[in-house]
Image 1 (cartoon, rainbow, N blue to C red):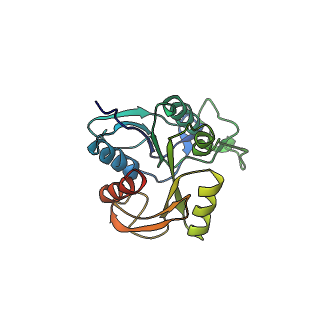
Image 2: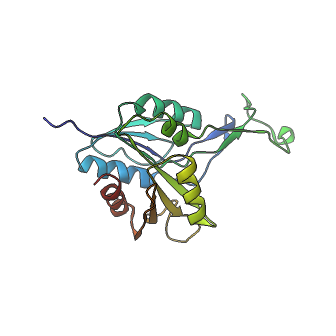
Amino acid sequence: MTKKIRCLISAGPTREWIDPVRFISNPSTGKMGYALAEEAVARGFEVDLVSGPVSLSAPPGVRVHHVVTAAEMEKTMKELFDEAHLVIMAAAVCDHRPKRQWSEKLKKKDFPKEFEWVKNNDIVQGLSAARKNGQKIIGFAAETTNSMAHAAEKLASKGLDWIALNEVSRKGIGFASDFNDVTLLSGAGETIALGRDTKKKTARKILERVWP
């Protein structure tokens, strides 16, 4: 019996808490990562989906691991990483968190004018550095300016096999939309424009390219 491909996918935003009722985050809805998980199951993969806070139902056949903060996502991804053949980091992870988190709600009069920030670990870069032979790692780059250059730099600096460039400043694609317009860049120097399409069909195109 052929061994199933294990696929590890991250999706959605992370939240970094200021106090019990306030946090910083981003507009990610998780739609792209969930579409990738659904398509991976359709291709016969065993799928673990590490999801930040979203309002989406778990795709049938997918094992969903719910997290909130970047640190929680990093911990869960590391725990599942060794058994994965294919890793797709589609989550929009907060790069920084407040240095201090208050245990009680801050009153208006006490709210700081400035915050100190701590840099979160780069999850996909850490996974790439710890990879074993045969593991393939794909990242996502949500960009607004000089998009190709920034995506190419991330591809190289993080040691990825592929990166999916998503220009989120364009209307009708990206965050919260049902559509995307992704360009794939590979470590081998390939650039493949997938064209504007639904996130479901974009997920299919991505998987066809990165795991043919």
